[in-house]
Length: 242
Ligand SMILES: NC(=O)c1ccc[n+]([C@@H]2O[C@H](COP(=O)([O-])OP(=O)(O)OC[C@H]3O[C@@H](n4cnc5c(N)ncnc54)[C@H](OP(=O)(O)O)[C@@H]3O)[C@@H](O)[C@H]2O)c1
Image 1 (cartoon, helix red, strand yellow):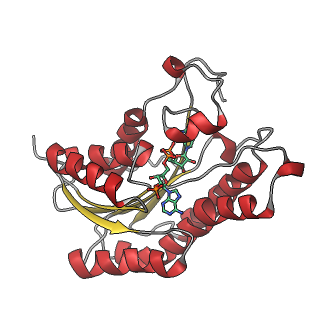
Image 2: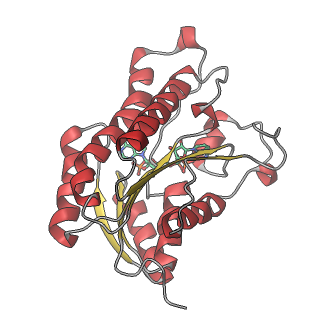
């Protein structure tokens, strides 16, 4: 069977581990070229090796998502090297766990910067290239906290609500264009991040990063008239509709 993402170019942020690494490898299994963005060069190299082994091509762009120039450089490098972009996955994220009254402004700011400001800048910078694609895809990874509120997570929750709001507006702006905009709202996934905020969830009840990655591949390979705006993805052990 021909690979469905051959010749397609994707940017994946937060590609150095967790869900971002799984998404990168899953796209590579369909022969995509994946531009891997995060800060840790060593971990990015590990992902790049897995991408190559899976049948895709990898390119590393070390990126600090709190810095606008670094985000712009990610798109500039992609443009210079590949002259195209088909898929943008805004996956990178940080969290903070504390009561609101004990949350430092800097912790709030960091969540907003990485989880909401960076995807905004990246969407803006990438849109000219995505508009040239046959079909372009923007996949924003929010969270269950993008539609709900949780105690001890006010900074994280605010940032994901902001990301969701931006995504809805952008989808409206791009309605009728060649670009499809999707939001994924997962519950607990077995990564470093969940260990920090929900160590109470049993490991064997968490979802695997590959399960989220499979859904991304589904969205970026679907060609029909049906469009899924938002996916709520929960652990089987958690309450329906979160
Ligand atoms: N795990 C869950 O239960 C869960 C549930 C719902 C939603 N999510 C969302 O899914 C996404 C991925 O989460 P994960 O669980 O895979 O987390 P993770 O394992 O902690 O990975 C986070 C990724 O973001 C990158 N990153 C963090 N800060 C960055 C910065 N300033 N500049 C550039 N890259 C940065 C990290 O790379 P470096 O450290 O190398 O820079 C890493 O690749 C996040 O948006 C998260 O909010 C996760």
